[in-house]
Each structure stands twice: as C-alpha cells, then as structure tokens.
Length: 317
Image (tube, rainbow, N blue to C red; front, top):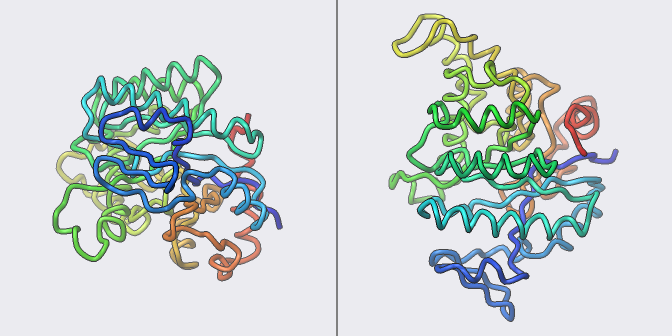
C-alpha cells in the first residue's frame, strides 16, 4: 500500500549560500558541516533533497511536505534579523523543493517568537497562493492564546490554511541531562501549545484553518481527560462559554509518530481516527524512518486511513 502523503519531513537549504551570510551561521561545503550559533547540525541528510527522495522511493511515499527543523529556528534573533533569516530560509526551501514538484511541497516557516513577522510572512505567501506553513509550538516565552496571534489565525482562517506545529527546544535546565529536551520537553511543548489553543477557543473562532500537531500531539492525548474535568468543574481562569476540550481537540489533526500502537490508538480516540496523518520526521532517528516495520502493530484498517484516506481531506494544490 502506497503512503500518499508525509506531512513531517525536514530539510535545511544551505547550498545556495544565503544562510551562511548571516552572523553565527557557518557552512563548510567541503566537509558538509553546518554550524548555527555554535551548535553543529550533525545529520547531513538535512542538506540533500535527493536523499529525501531516495528514502521516499524506498518506502513508497508519494508526496512529502517539507519544513525547517528546530536547529534552524533561532528564536533568540531580534525582529529585524529574524525577518531576514526567515526570508532566506523560506526562499531557499521553496527553491530547493520546487525543482522536485509535485513530489515535494514546502511548509513555509513562521517565527512564533515574532507574531507580527509571522502574520506578514503568511499574508505575503498567501497572496502568492501558498497556504501551508510550519511554526514552532514553543520554546519561547510566548503563548498562542495571546491576542497578538489573532491576525495570524485570521489570515490562516481566511485562506483555509494549514499550520504544522513542531516543538522547539525549551528553556528548562532540568532537561539538560539524558536528552530530556527531546524525550520530555518536546511532547510537553506541543501540549502547552495545544492547551492554549483549546482553552482560548482559537479553532472554535477560526474553524477554517487546519492545525496539525507533531508527534501525535505530544502529551496532549494523555492530558485530554484532565482538561475536560477542569472545564466541567469550572476551574479558575477557564471560560465556561468556550467549547469543552474534548470537542475542541477534534478540530486538530496530528501526525502518527506515537512510537506505540496503543498510544496511537489513544490519539485516534482523542483527536478522531480521521485526523491521524502520516509523518516520518525524516531524517531524524526519533521518527519513523522504517514506517512499515515501526507501524507493524497498527491494524490494516488504521494504516489505510493514515496512509491513504485521511490525507484526502487536505488541500494539496
């Protein structure tokens, strides 16, 4: 069975040299090494679109949506530098994948740390016919329930846009050991983003946009019943006029990276079986780089929904 769509793959556009003109970014084309703000980006596949295509061929993946990975987010940049960085990232990514259309499509990056730049970037892209984007789910001292994100939600709603929320690295020093920024921090960052969107009623207010949560929604599915109980018992700070969390979560979609068939079943129960999309997180080892083996515990009916049926609800123009 062919996998019709992978919503979660990553590339960094380095070969045109645009990124290496920024302070703090060093690209050595001879050794194929990239350093961003002193941190080495170790997975060289991120720089080579043909390696992504070869992986797709090997695993019978028809189409992939490509986003910028967290090592390139650079959330510390001030607004003017961030705007230039985002333009270079998005121009490079669009050029990189356009040569391989229709198999690859870009998810243009929006900077969560600068809502005004995010909406300007989205509006300019929408005017050119691009309606699919990615954004960090967190890792910065901002919350998605804040009023300054409403122009972004309105723009995405008006365009029936798609936004892929992917966690960035958090700021909690307790997670410095044991790879916990990834193993624990990432799922929690996604859940924090989802909680603010749920309790602020963002998708209830802007229902024509689609928000997809990475990694099966992170910790969200496990917390859904607790959120429902908080709403039902009118916990302080919750607006009783907002729709209940159980209903609100059905407005999201998520990728299938749960690492366990029963965890994926829980995600289907919380978000809806029709809201689970295939995502590989290529080329990162915490993803599904061998999808048929790693999803072998999922029923054929579920696989057909994830690989074939559910992507049909998404606009692929």
